[in-house]
Amino acid sequence: MRWSERRARFRALFAGDRCVHPGSVYDPLSARIAEDLGFEVGMFAGSVASLAVLGAPDLIVLTLSEFAEQAYRINRATNLPLMVDADHGYGNALNVRRTVEELETAGVAGLSIEDTLLPPPFGGAGQAQLISIEEGVGKMSAALAGRSDPNLLIAGRTSALSLSGVDDAVHRIAAYEATGVDAIFLIGVKTKDQLATLRKAVKLPLILGGAAPEVQNLDYLSSMGVRLSLQGHQPFMAAVQAVYDTLKALREGAAPADLEGVAPPALMKRLGREADYQAAIKEFLGGA
Image (cartoon, rainbow, N blue to C red; front, side, top):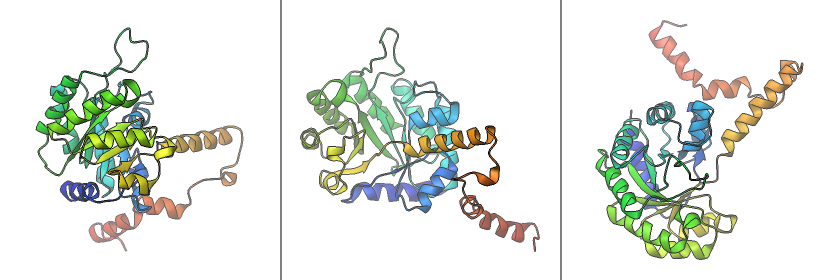
């Protein structure tokens, strides 16, 4: 597969001057939809992966191998550069290095490693906590050591802004930048003043997740060095609602022909790349 080519396109986006919204994807068909609609990047989140693969909440019960396998299924189905949320790297710094090796092999274009204490520890009462800056630096360094394709983009991610404040966030992102990561992933930016403060702390391109409406303007974000701004994972939730409504209607006696919102055959054939398979049948199986 042409992993390096799509990684080069992904890096070109970060070297440019424009911020884009990634398409939130969770399986091969959703990724093909995003690609066909013109999204420049796909985003595969850990929370969505846990639901799609296990039907479980985002409590770090999904394993690295399960996450990497689903990422590979997505990547082999499209040419869309895929950014993934690798959570805490599935353990300590040694696990982080292994995580990068596995996800690089699975074809991702970029990944983030965060400094949240995961999985939630005993006695934490469900409150999110951060690891120390020193441990975070070790994880970022290990991630870089695990990379063999220099085009793979590695982002250092922190939720410090909402958990410990702006000052701690500034210290963390400056320390992570010093390790040599390629971008900084910020969670929970609420105001333009916060973003301005964080922007001054580092020179690297920025990724935003969970940002407030006040800052969600692509022209403004572009001017602030943000290159990727997540919009949430509504496509997965919409798909769940559609399946629920359809099965409920059928269970209650609706006729299949009367259902609304069902993808037409032409769309299913296009997303399944039926024309490509029919051509292969004709070429290799002697089809008429």
